[in-house]
Amino acid sequence: MFRNQYDTDVTVWSPEGRLLQVEYAMESVKQGSACVGLRSNSHCVLGALKRSVSELSWHQKKLLEIDDHMLVGIAGLTADARTLAKYMRNECLHNKYVYGTPMPPHQLMADVADKHQRTTQTYVRRPFGVGLLVASVDPLTQKPHLYQTCPSGNLYEFYASAIGARSQSARTYLEKHHETFGDASRDDLIVHALQALVGCVSGDDELTKENASIGIVGKDEKFTLLEGDALQPFLDRLELKGGDDDEEEAGDDAAAEAEPMET
Amino acid sequence: MMSSTTSTFGAPLMRHSEGQVVLGGSGEDAVFKPADYPGREQPYEHRFSPYDFNGGTVAGVSGEDYLVIAADTRMSSGYEILSRNTSKLHQLNPNAILASSGCKTDMDQLRSVLDIKSKIYQHNHRKSMTATSTAQMLSNTLYGRRFFPYYAFNVLGGIDAEGKGCLFSYDAIGSFERTQYSATGSGQAYVIPFLDNVIGNRNHTEEKPTLSKEEVVELMKEAFVSAGERDIYTGDALEIMVMTKDGVTKETFELKKD
Image (cartoon, rainbow over all chains, first blue to last red; front, side, top):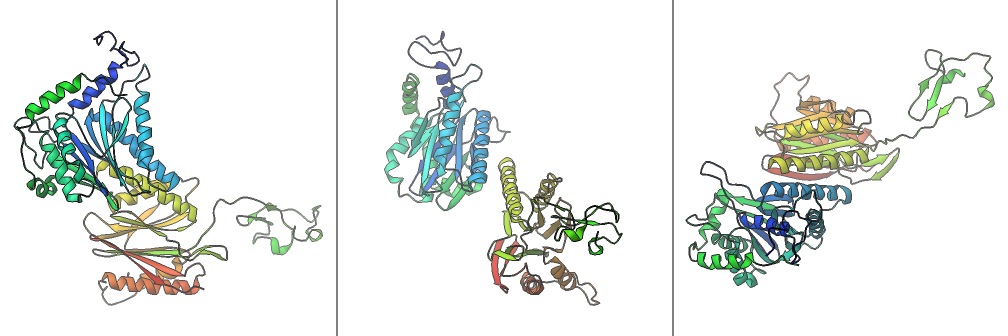
């Protein structure tokens, strides 16, 4: 209602109790191409749809390594994401140097969330325009965890999640199948991630080994990145749909737009 | 000053915790008569030494497509043994193994610093460092502490970008050279001449044989057995790592415990 008067500075509240700049930053996340994450009791998998600017350009990398036991998938402003990844990497190196043990993911995520929050409460900065899905294994318990951050500074933990453009289709798929994830094998998880991504491609495009990318962390397994030819056997196992879910997505996205910021 | 406490030039020596230092001379009319002060014939400067030598010997041999690097596992200080099973070998990345002897804490710190630098390189370049790059990085890291050195004598071994074994030996401040074989540490004087003979084929008239990695491993064991015999700081056990482009294997060989 009052969007235009109260949306210039991040430090200005709207009469409805919303920080509009932060919400606009979250829009930026929705513009990024899709990234999905899901976990079982032993592994955590991230899948990403890599966008390319033109036929001549490469596909933008969306999965970044943080440490042996941690991986991050990004949606939104890539440059902001790289700053955050650099920060996370340094924190992990520092923790290993000082305490001789890999960084506990929940501790790092709390710090990352606080880093996001600081930008929402000062004049001179702007919120990060990127959403992160963080796949990690806690080095003490050897259990996998999937975290999500958003520009507001909120931190969520999920069994499965998806962010970015047309991600509602992925979320619907994940919700439908999430009960089978717990005991799923590593390969099955990868196929689920790719299947969830199928609905996120735009228009006539399809999911190929060029534009898909998968990252896995697991207990007793250092992080692995699957791209290019390594993905083909998994892509072959998919049922490529596309098309049917478009109408469903359009309705869901419109509904999501009017939601106030989560508390 | 007493004759036993003079240097060859006739000038008196002063005892110092880091070694003896020559002082300017004083005559017969000196007020201080050493005989009156047993045990205090010379000035003794107390000084804290930041270094301790924790002993050990390290050696490496590079081959056509392999690298063998070995180190004993004894850690000592003075005449005491502090540990019989500490490792002096550390794999920095899939292409390079670092072996050091010297002051244990400096060795550990150097290792931690290099691990961090290797990881940062891997994050930024999305690949592991090559062995030759690792060698350069180690040199620069050591030189960065030119005026308060890491008391670590290093041998870095790996497989280079062409798949050949490579070995680099260092001094404490980063000077390094690629060699076929090398040894450093307390027992280097026993190991190097042996390697000169069997690996370098020095003073042999017949042709230099090509050695397999299994033969080199056996020769390493012999070298360390010899070193352990005469060097008090070398012994307990020998860790041998063999690196090829397919990976790394590790073997432990028992040495004399005396």
